[in-house]
Length: 190
Image (spheres, rainbow, N blue to C red):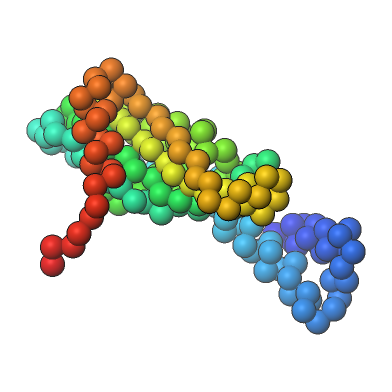
């Protein structure tokens, strides 16, 4: 645990008028420091390390879609959580990637202080650079506690961002197929 971070949290508690020595807050500085280290561990991960050993040569030219990837991040403006679902797709040219690595890539960027717009673009750009596919699409839907708990206090708002590269940007039919696939109801067949 980061001792300096722990001490900063203790000081923060004093600054808001709390007594960090009272029973309920005795271990709070340590817990918050550990929590922040976990919530921002993406700074210690390199995207290329996460995906490097999971790319394979494959003669597949069909759309690959991974949808409903849960993510949690912290808004860099208020340090409050935002969370939701990431949907992504790519059309291979000559390489594919293990599906779990796509989910891990979302985690690498989400576990940093973020804005949703940048997060969406970073994921798309990384997939595009690593795989050199025909195209990449990323759509993120998220609830932001900075909008729900403070400020405008809009409880049912959802922010939607997209990053479309290659054929997903240039071809309306491809883009439409992707959007239809990510919004189709899922039913288990087993």
